[in-house]
Length: 187
Image (cartoon, rainbow, N blue to C red; front, top):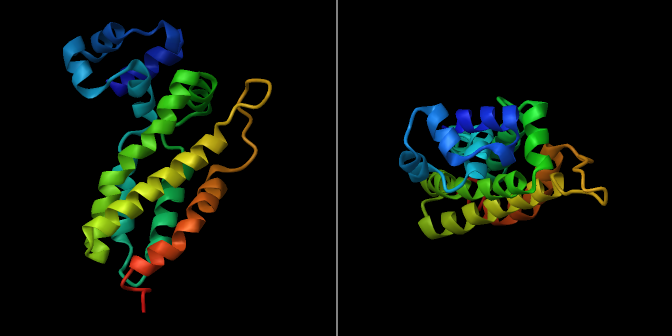
């Protein structure tokens, strides 16, 4: 469904794509579509952000316990956001040029919380602390994305900093909390 949504948005423009069109192109009913996505914008953005949160959590979990948690998280997040994967320039332009798609793109980091919470909790052994840290990390990622996709006075989004650099800057203030919670560095 998400691939059909993106393809139709690129072909016809996001404003000209209806949920019924996406459902038909994906071979599902509109009701099935609505079980997965609350809007066409969410479906279009999901084609770009698909499974990123699980890849980030897996990358964090794959680091050896001796790697500081802050390092594991920053490395995992910057790697996943720096790798364009399916994100072509055309797709990113589509998302950043459309306010509705940009808003859905900025909401996407919220999906990072649960998988990241699990990865952090398995490492530090404290669910509550892991939950707070994961929520803080998702918020930092969102702020970095907001800065990266901020329209200028002209109304156009002009990228002035590489996204990995912005992510590192926004995650840096969380390093002391991550270090304090990490058994590998909290000595």
